[in-house]
Length: 303
Image (cartoon, rainbow, N blue to C red):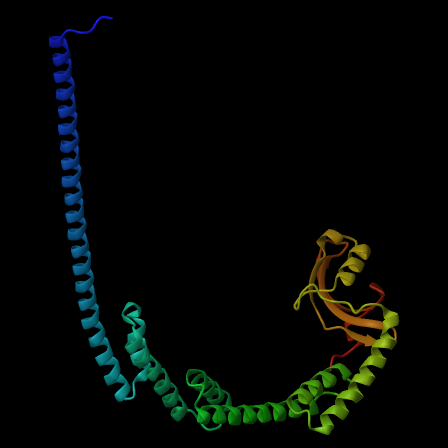
């Protein structure tokens, strides 16, 4: 077996030691660099945080001063009876609103509604009911607001009841549908009034009998729109016109009924054999979606 010479062995060991020392130094240097970098980063973070906190402090101080001025202005306006103007001021600064300012806004809303109530006629039930409704929503525990709201709601209901009752007195008795609808509303407004229920039931019975009788005429014709025409009439006129392409439909009356069917009156224009555009109005009797009879404009009068 051959062993390395002693000099060579020592030399090799020195190289190993030097390499180890070099690696250790490198590790120390890297660690030192990382430590220094970490310290710099932490310092930069602290500086940035201090800057952010300072900026927030400056902004808060600025907002606090601005809010103080706005609230002072609002208080003066409320004290002098100008709560509505105080609310207008508050709307200009939504970013300044905090709990304290929110409470002042609430006070301004209440004072504004109270001022409106004071300026409103005691006969303006709708307006008074509206204002007390808002007050009751702002302060639901206030019995006075709820009581006044109920009072003006009742008065408003009574006024509407009288208005509807006066209106129904002027409707012809033969107009079963119109009478029935108004008495139905009156029953909803005042279900304890026996007269309304009796009249409603009477007109409903008559209307139902009439609809059953009219069912033999087919569905009631309907206009294309409130100011439009009846498609059944347009179809008839095109089929019987000399120049159907010149037909222009005008407005039509509401739909009525006779013993012969549904009755409607319509305006229309079309050219004659001489190429002259003629404007006309005629009455058309319709059954089962088909025009069965055409009559001149003087055949019926609308009451």
